[in-house]
Image 1 (cartoon, helix red, strand yellow):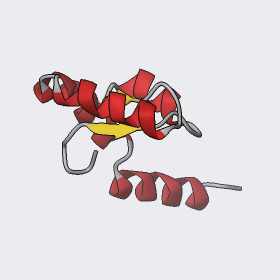
Image 2: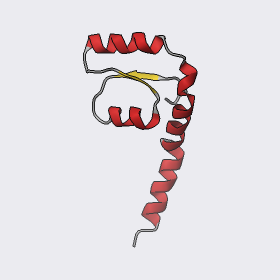
Image 3: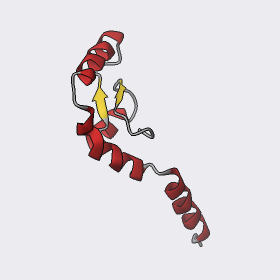
Image 4: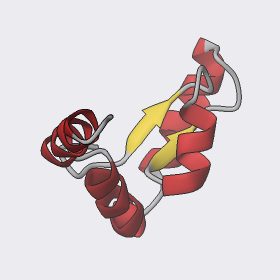
Length: 79
């Protein structure tokens, strides 16, 4: 995502929610080699520019500098 390119991944952890929310690439249907291969084929058949808006939103949401500043402000303003 940091490189601005679509991502292909398996549905583990919080990845399914992130894919639904940001639409940053192609998510395999299962955490298997066959499902990942299917996802890879599907991704290669898609126009990568269709993921641009989701990738931009993800970059803004997961901005490391912004997150660090937000955390520092929260710590400084705690009673």
